[in-house]
Image (cartoon, rainbow, N blue to C red):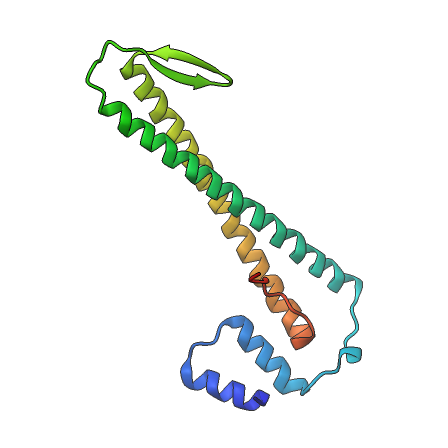
Length: 159
């Protein structure tokens, strides 16, 4: 599809993202750009490296969030199971480090709630960092696509 056709179809549908608009604008202004026409400056290389570092860090943070959410679900399940206990006089083993310590049902419930709250705060902080990184990546994408057009691929592989 020609750049003008892309721009017209995008305008008609009103569903283009900011990055797609920049790509199309770059294509219409320059026409088809050969790979050898683009000069990569030191600043451009720094932006590309920053993009790669942030992309990698975001993936690590997402994996950490997923792991913490699984732990949070396990704590919730343990809390639910603890509520179903009939005998309040039993000591419930609670793991602290590598050791299990017996606590009353009430103490264990309080410890589970405190652990859940702390973990929820950690997850919230990690999600905020992911949002910040996504904003940086969006800005870098716009800048890099504006200069390099289709000669650079900044989209994540889905493999």
